[in-house]
Image (cartoon, rainbow, N blue to C red; front, side, top):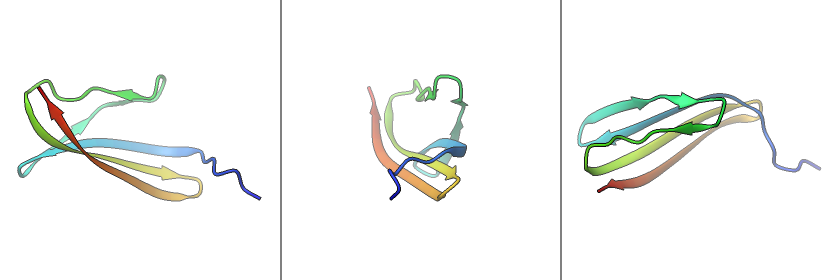
Length: 64
């Protein structure tokens, strides 16, 4: 029985605002990224390639 863990091979993080896509730097060492500093509404997209397949997280972000 698998416990649901996986090893990420590659993680890409970006935000979308209107029709603009901004690639964000992902820091592997501490598993973080910085959001844009410009105020507005964004769509956050995290693409993860793992040893067990691919996953994607999408969510709304508001920078105030």
